Image (cartoon, rainbow, N blue to C red):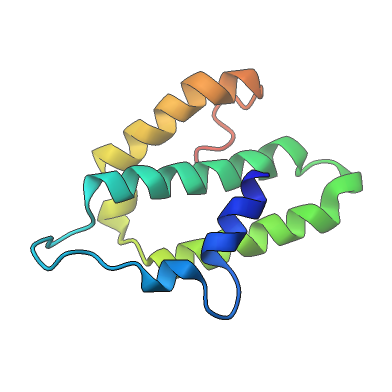
Amino acid sequence: MALRVISAFFCGNRPPITRLMIAKEYTGMPVGFLECWATVLWTLDAIDAVLGRSARHQGFIEFVRKARAEVAKILGLTQSEMKSETMTSTKSKLDDALGVRLRLQGKAAA
């Protein structure tokens, strides 16, 4: 379900993300957006980490990896944004809450 929602927003010929506008007064990516992007990227990494080792899921995982590459390309986040406190904190909280339940143990923290 998560992949379907993410794909609907980020993938395709004219993905909705391309119509998202940020107000001119922001000189960088707004914190709320960074939290959202961190969650999206974490989710794709978590799907890969949970299912990636199974030969049974390889076709699906290839699509997950392509979707993640497309999301990263579209977002165009800088290295400083990717390593920002907001991104790392959000991913860490996801690891602590959902990652534990999925038995990821830091595997999705890419």
